[in-house]
Image (cartoon, rainbow, N blue to C red; front, side, top):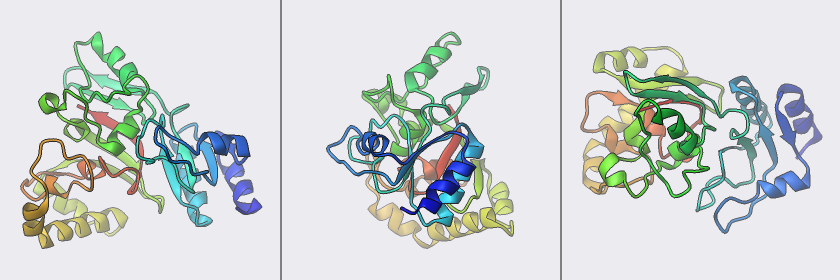
Length: 258
């Protein structure tokens, strides 16, 4: 990788930036058998740092790979990319609305730490992977985590209210459930946000029958893009489109959970 990329990344990110062999070796593994050394590692302080890191990576044609605790079992958070580790600094619970039963969190929040905060209010975030003592919310959303109680309480996709995320081109999306009229208003926008809403609607409408016919009818389908969440409902929440996408579509900046 060019010295120019390293210099530019260090100049634009206030958090830690690593290009040395030791740190790249540490981030070359997760809980799977795979080992792939990243191009570099960025540990952002906040949303502005994430946006800066993604912009620099885009300018230098470097792939990006968001990462939390690294508990994934299939190599989801290792790759020849700029790893963006949100677990160290972006790990705050931003707010809890007990009346609405909602919690707004950064992606590096550990699932059990969130539930420790919620317990005093008689609330609980249900998805319970075996790694809940260290699994980050961002990774749980990327993986659409479930757990042994998910047949009763649902998966991560069942507990997402809204999502703030960053695209590779620098666009920030604030996604929530929309009525048909609200969705139509978003689709009329003359920017990247409007384009995404228009194109997604076209994909669903053009493939509605195929989605119905071929998507498996099982309770815990957490792999692939969840297009089947949209072909039967009039109220669409594109946050559900991001859950389970394994970081291939966007970087999670914050989430509001049910």
